[in-house]
Length: 240
Ligand SMILES: *Cc1c(COP(=O)(O)O)cnc(C)c1O
Image (tube, rainbow, N blue to C red):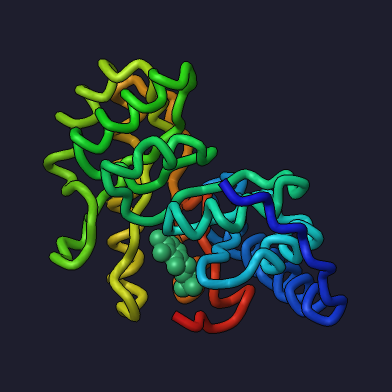
């Protein structure tokens, strides 16, 4: 184990830029929530993948308490230098079963898309004597390139998840097709909302609907999203 990297002083200009974008995005979130009429409260998850620890610091300084990363290893390195920044860490990307032991240290694992991954997370959490909060990832657009369960596969899986006592199923996550027309986005997001209803009807304490990225978060919120995962709009384009 290497020693935690000391946190660098945050550049005031960088922090001010991130804060301005966070404020603008919060206004747009509020407007979309009002238009949608679902009455939900919306959590802004700032996606800091490929950006340095200063992105997390700047987001936190701007009042953001939820941070998303899609790779376990990159997140662990970043977190080691940010032990004094009390954010909730979301694992938003695809999770490999051999990363389950690391994945359970996240506050919410968004990408549970199979029974085998769920079992691996449950075993890791049980061995650690803790509970792991998860979302079931659904693929309601049928795109072959996306991870996630179809609406048809969902009920059987969520039933079986009751047996995994170290997992708490909190809801559903989905990704819409990139650059799809608004009508398609709306269809995908409302089908994901129906999937969240299925999870609740199966008896899970599931109130989370994680959907919406920089290009489509307003439509997602209008269709009921409770968590939007925003990277580019807050931090600019990613290097890789
Ligand atoms: C990168 C990523 C995001 C953020 O995407 P932006 O378009 O940069 O806002 C959201 N969700 C997941 C799963 C991601 O991998």
